[in-house]
Image (cartoon, rainbow, N blue to C red; front, side, top):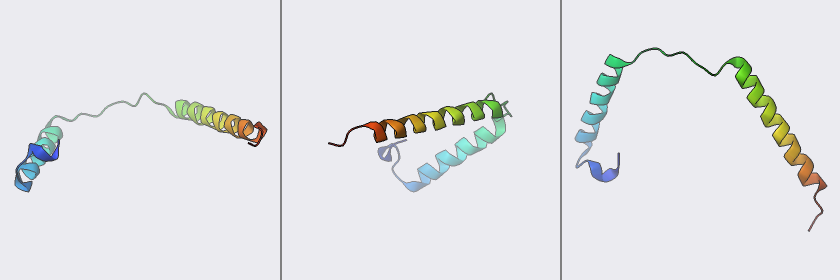
Length: 63
């Protein structure tokens, strides 16, 4: 949505309420595919990446 899509706030309110009603009528539960072990792996990779960056910064000669 862009500011020029509506001529007044009532139109925005009505459109958002219609979306909410439709979504609530059709929404269904879903299964997460990102497991806690996937999260642990991601966090470990981020930690390694951060540590590598810190080591590179401290090893770089001052300009």
